[in-house]
Length: 413
Image 1 (spheres, helix red, strand yellow):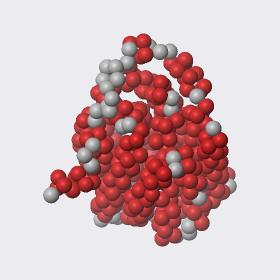
Image 2 (cartoon, one colour; image 1 turned 30 degrees about the horizontal axis):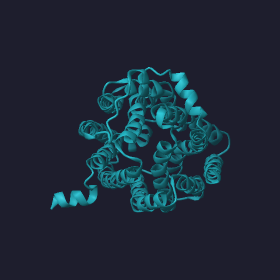
Image 3 (cartoon, one colour; image 1 turned 120 degrees about the vertical axis):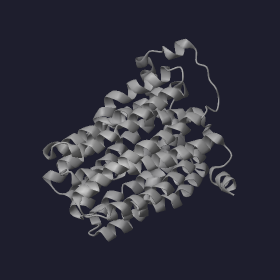
Image 4 (spheres, helix red, strand yellow; image 1 turned 45 degrees about the vertical axis):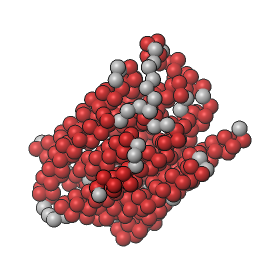
């Protein structure tokens, strides 16, 4: 019975099955170690500046580590083994977060933010490399199905685990007791992470390609120049960077608005996340059908238009209940965005230099991640949270316009 259910959910393609299971376990790790990290920081005494740095510092770290790390993986004898090593390192880092409460109270918020930022050294390399490796593992015709299934099952696991974690965290109102629970969950995430990596190692490239030695020795600058000479890749990269700037600017503002202005506790954060995740699970199939019927280029335009509405909805919400209802729209368009971004990147990247192309995209979006949250915080400090949210919406709308211009340009060609 369980085997039949597994086949129905995961299909018969082993790579898609392992990719989906890896996504489920990755989500569990994320919920246990990352989803409540901003509230963990709040309980340690973090303020608005810490919240902004919490989102910006990972970008600064990734700027200097993603491209060298990707090249290291590309030149390794086994891409899968090197990828696994970076995943192992990334699963050790959260244990350092769990140790922060043992430090003097005055330094806890700053140390927490620094460690969280440094976590992005292995995390950005492993996540970006998995994107590249998925291009080896899945054929173009399989990508939409693989990404959709992984995202659907990941969101289902996020709902389940978030409810359990949120319930446990809400059992106590004592700050010290809740902090100890965070430490326990982080420790659990480490052991789940070890199992998660096992499924990466089970995936096999769809076509075994033996690259000649000189391919590995291609000069980096020459490869980068070739990437920027590809008009389709440059159009996607430009639109993506504009959109990412607005997308990432909103992250600390949303957390700040929900926690500091609407005074959400762990239970409310769980309710908000669960509603958003439920909508995402339901809507993934819509986005998969849209991609297959129309194209990644049209789907990403539609998704980013919807994402530009999210900051406006946040600015209009005055209660946690209203904020929760707003997740119906947020979840729908977020599902579309995370589905189409990876597929569009793989589709737009020059086949000859795909690894470099993906690494460049990751590095440059890390630059926007390093800058945009700080700009958002500066606008919030100078004017108000509502003004900062509207500016965020404006940048996202510019990203949508860039994607729609790209779509129309492709149609003409």
